[in-house]
Length: 161
Ligand SMILES: [Zn+2]
Image (cartoon, rainbow, N blue to C red; front, side, top):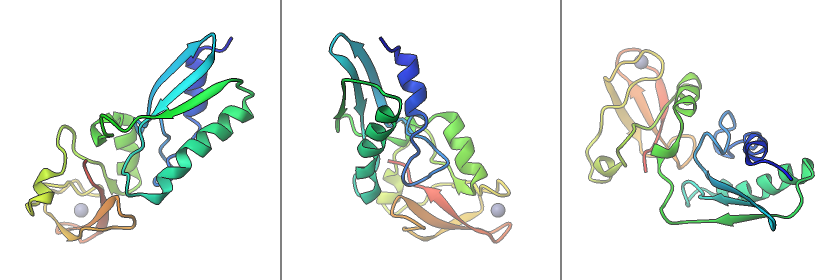
């Protein structure tokens, strides 16, 4: 009999396909781990549905569970409620910042951006909020490209959804 703690720690080895420094647990993609007589049930909610890489998450999770010899597992995908950047842990936000990617702001989906208004995005390098969006799309579709007016560095901003 495996414990759910054990499963969570195994799942923490699966990195996010978009941001390899983050794992699927930190991203808030893994919603639930249930252990029953029938086996292990993992529930995931994929992030940005527009990201092609997201399809690989389920495969990656299955691979690592196989590696650890976990028998009788199922992985279910739940699309509602939709994943939101609010589910990312504080550790995940800090790791993003260290990668030079401005982490998504908590408690706010990007409605302002959709309506054409820019929010204050902090530069991950110098912390200045004197930043502006250069392009809605950064290195991937999940990020926007910003530039800092203080240190002149361009950086990726992880969009809030
Ligand atoms: Zn800066």
